[in-house]
Image (cartoon, rainbow, N blue to C red; front, side, top):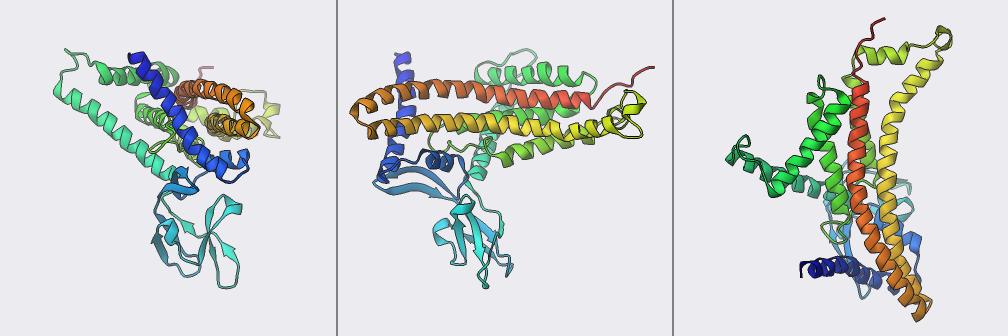
Amino acid sequence: MKQRKSLLLLLMMVWLPLQLFASHGTEEGKLNISEIVLGHLSDDYEWHIASYKGKSISIPLPIIVRSSSTGQWTFCLPEDLPSNYFFDEAHHGKIYEKLPDGSMIRPLDLSITKTVAQIWIVVIVLILVFSCCSRWYRHHDSKSEAPHGFVGAMEMIVMTINDDVVKSSIGEKHYKPYAPFLLTIFFFILTANLIGLIPIFPGGANVTGNINITLFLAICSMIVINLFANKEYWKDIFWPHVPVLLKAPIPLMPVIELFGVFTKPFALMIRLFANMMAGHAVILSFTCVIFLGWSMGVGFGIGLNIFSVLMLIFMNFLELLVAFVQAYVFTLLSAVFIGMAHKEEEVE
């Protein structure tokens, strides 16, 4: 009975967004797959839930912009945007300001977009989860009573990341100051990935598939790696243990090593961004295939329906695995890079 309920719930999770998606995909008469996929992956000033009979059902998000010409702040909803501002579709729907001389300029935009709102939802979820765990430890003696259930699972994950990733990669001597940062990075990426797989509100926003978010995470790791690095790390960059001809008079190896300071966080950024964006794009593409098949006839529609639903179920399970793997890999590589920044002094 429980297996039937789980299967029914899974089919509803797949079929519900398809039905809501269908009303949007068939109203226009033509199905533009690339436009639909890119539209769902991009950021927005409202949280689109569904389209029903040609009308969009969405949650408007607050717009906060500062005029570049007058310096005046504007607080409003998307439908109440003043006439001197407009959404420029040529620039992914971003807000632009039309100046009196007819030119267009991007104002200072601090709006609560869909991605920002999803980040706050992730933060709230993490606060609730760890508050629940903290409450258990306050009311129980962890030395005499082991946690069980959800709290036990969270302790297992925390200890696994702390002992097998952070401690083993950085070293027992230096790992403690970095453990809170790396654990925060892991749980933020993991929670954002999992909530992003929920097809309807409050999920659906592809936070880690936004390159601005992955860039910020990579910059944070870069600062932590280089700001607290020891002198041996910098010595290996500017005066590595290679033949002198490779260091002077042309500093070939120092330039390569210095270039590596920036390629490490760049690799973190691109790996997370590309993997998460690709997964969401594939799921959305298989959704579009259903409606493309029906437009080609009943036979194609039935066949592609069955194929696409099976592939959607498979891709959702695969994305669950990828959600954990990408959070783990980002944390592991950050820990490895931090460990490399704390090299012990070599004895000649």
